[in-house]
Structures are given as structure tokens and as C-alpha cells.
Image 1: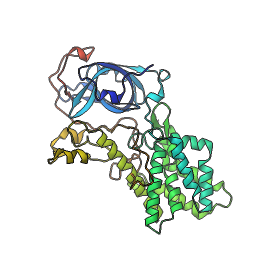
Image 2: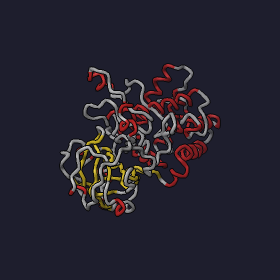
Image 3: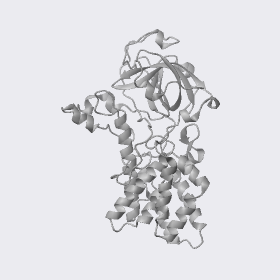
Image 4: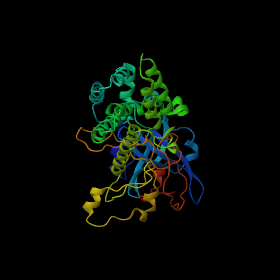
Length: 413
């Protein structure tokens, strides 16, 4: 099946034109119209170019249960602008079997050379002065199967670096920030901190799958990347004869404490300098990436992003704000913007951090530093938040909503 329209194309498509295309269902929720109580669908649709919110207002009962999150659906629809953001209005939809889909058209991918990034990781390991850490990290990352998984893994299912190669991009950024911190704070052991960076999200290669969609594996849902990564790390340390037991304990603590606080899913709080530094590096890298993605969703003359679920805030496009030459409108003036819950498009990430780059983002993986925790990320679509608006005057249900034209920008919630 050839995909003709991508999310990126729809943002500039003629608003009066209908289109047909296939998308991955990233999130799904059935809601009720405020006045009539009739159901309608709220979807987040994705392909390799990004994500976009969608609504289906009519004939929902006939299709609501025939597909689920991570399915592929072919839709007939149009794009409308609502509250300053583009969204799809679906007239008809049908499920597309996975065998008919090319995953490469739906999975976002890093814009950077994966092999080159992985080469930088190996070069960092080769520079270690601690022989035990150099041996352990080399054994791990030169394992062909581990390397294959690590290169392809996303860093999260949706919050940040949620694309093929995202884990590697996130880790490389964190490595570079760790080098800066270790050069500034003499109490930090650079080899130990770098090892923590390389290992902290290692369990993601088992927790997440990126075959047809980025989603959690059964083991990932049951155990989580911290438990899986720490158990796997302990076995690898024990496989090296004479590996120092106390050094193994420090490495395990780095993995177990990198979410920072117990309420954020961290089994332990950071209890030595490298562990504390790792937590903040990780959180910073994740959060700055989320801000980058959020500002990328700002369109037109807007200077504020939609409400970002991970950051628990709207985000200001400072360049647009400065260009405006006047005080930006307070985001609280727009309940729709503040409460809109669209997850930012998982656009392939920013430029791979360069050595001279200043502080890189890091965060608790698809998990925020303030409640709610960024981990785990629901792949069910539950918890989508969207502005509630009065339902417009009811119109008789039709087989195809396009047979009854409605004003542009309408939202019938």
C-alpha cells in the first residue's frame, strides 16, 4: 500500500480538500458530547513525519471497537484549524492489516547517522582509564545483538526521543554533558559517570519494541526498564572474572536511582555524586527535547504551544515572542490552549549534540520531574486531555460527514 499523504503534508493542505491516507493509531479515547451525550472519537494519528490529533464525530458506535492503539487505519477526512492548531476530522475509516503496511512509513527515525553516533559511544568507552569499566562496557557494546538493539531503540514511547535511534541520540547527548560536568566538578569520576549514562536506560532495548509501532513489550509493561536493565547488568558484571563487587554495586545504584525520586518510579534516590549528576543530566536532556518538540507545534501567529502533558505546562516560543514586538498574550487567556492535551509530534530529533554544544537535555524518560512522572508512558491513549467546548447545534448523522459542510475551525466537543 502506497502512502500518499503524510502528517507534515496535512499541516499545509487546502482546508477545503478531502484526502485519503493511512496512519498509525498512537492514542485513542471515546468521549461524550457535552449536550447530547453521543460518543465521539479522539485519536492521535502518526506517521514518520509527525503526529496530529483527529476527531470523528458521527457513526462512532459502528467503528469505535474495530481498532485499537497501535493498529493502522485508512481514513477519509479533511483538516481543520481549531484553537490555532491543525487537526484531522475523520469522515470514514477502516482497519489496514499490518502485512499491507511498510513500517518505514510510520516509524519516525533519527535524522543523524546511527553508525556514526554509535562509533562515538565506542570511542568514549575506549578512552576510559578504569580497566574494569572499559572491559565491561566494551563487552556490552561490542556484542553484535546488543549493538543492533541499542542502535534501533527509541528512548521512550512518546514523551522524548520517541523514534528509531532515539535512545542512542539521547545517550550521546548525555555523554557530552557528563564530560562537561566532570571537567568542572573534580569530585566526579568521568568513567563512572559515563558508564551510568550508557547503562541508565539500557533496559529500554527490552522494554520497548519498534517493529511496526513504538510500543511496550509484555515484559516491559510487567517489569519496566529499570528492573530489566539492572538485572541484566548484574549478570554481565558477574560474568567477568574478578570484577570488583563494590564497583558493581555503584553501577547498579546508578541505574536504580536515575529517575531521582521514589515517586517518579526510582527504586532508590541518588546517594553519591555521579548518581545525582546522572539524574539531572538525564532529566535535562529529556525536558529540553520535549520543549523543542512543543515549540515545533506552534503555528501561525501563536507564541504559546498547546499544553504539554510531560512538562505540565505550555511552552513559549521565545523567538516568536521577541519578534512580535509586544507583550505576548497570557496563555491563561486561552483555556483551549492551556488545556489542550496533544502530545507533541515525535519529529525526528534535533541535530545530534556536537562536542561544543552546551547543556544537553535530560529527563526521567518519558517521565516528568514533577508529577505526573514521565515513566511509564501509557500506550493505551488513556489520559488524553483536550479542551472541552460547547457542542455546536446538532446535525443529523450522515454516512459521510462531508455531505453536511460545517464551518472551518469547528470543534463539537
